[in-house]
Length: 130
Image (cartoon, rainbow, N blue to C red; front, side):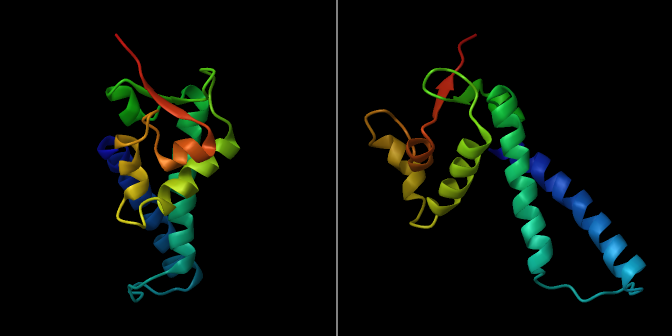
């Protein structure tokens, strides 16, 4: 997760620089725009995060960070997950953080070691041996 976060932060940094360069300087002609919450830019960030994860999960079941730890997300039959399953994992994953991360810690008491989003999206995370 930390490795993927670093990649996402770099990607978001580039998108933010482009956005402010295009919107503030080119469209509005303002060099020193006020800094504050921007709902449009925040929505772009959410889409970037989703499509980053969905691309890697759907392509080979692993983000770059998951590759480093030899983890893979897959369907129970071992095949790659669909875009809809990626969306379910993403949305339920965010919602499972709300009750103090209970949805993530659920895997510690679950007999199948699945989080809420794995249960809901019908996916599993497996360890890939060497």
